[in-house]
Image (cartoon, rainbow, N blue to C red; front, side):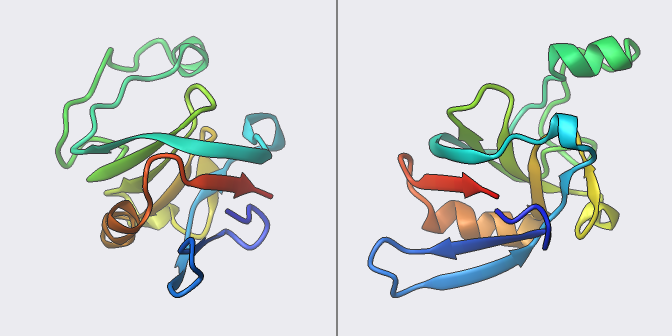
Length: 128
């Protein structure tokens, strides 16, 4: 995931498949984590639970949001081994191409669905 160009690049292990997806990126440098990580879990229809820092900034946030059109994680989520960091879809397509997230990388729902099918648990992820 390239936070400057706001794009996610995917190469299959054998490099036979390459995909490029526009993305949202963290809203500020203090929310951005860079480096290498891995996909540790995949979830279709994820439940969203605000992080402690999100709740600190906005105590009115709900405890959780079930899967559906009000869920900020969209239709699919790829969980990284960095706690609270994900690559996920979004129902709010205005966020794509912008610095608008609380730390995650967001994709259009149709793109995260494709990436979800391509990426396996254990896939290396690099954020630059």
